Image (tube, rainbow, N blue to C red; front, side, top):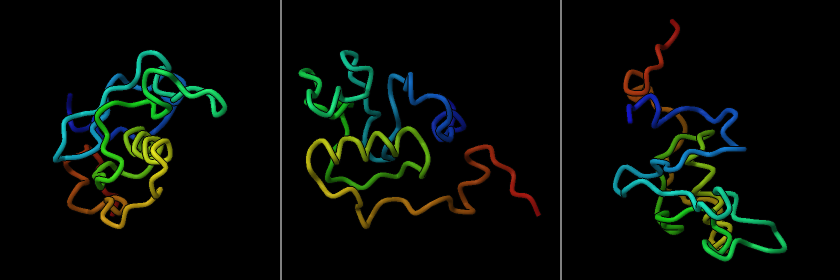
Length: 110
């Protein structure tokens, strides 16, 4: 998977999220639950397979390096909420850094 795909900004993939997301540079990619298609089930009846988190392989206590607005970042938030952890982690990546622009295929406008 290319770095452009890894950091693709969230668009229409809420209905059909990718099978895996790169949520951290230090951890392997997370896989979506195939039973609930990554949704976690319904609020009053969470998915029995994933326990309502929608994803496997995301540590709810670890910081994420996923950019804000990406499916990977939303997956991390979803898992944190399902495990009743704090939504925010002070060590999470903060926005888009200028150093990341060439790596993700974005050309800054002068």
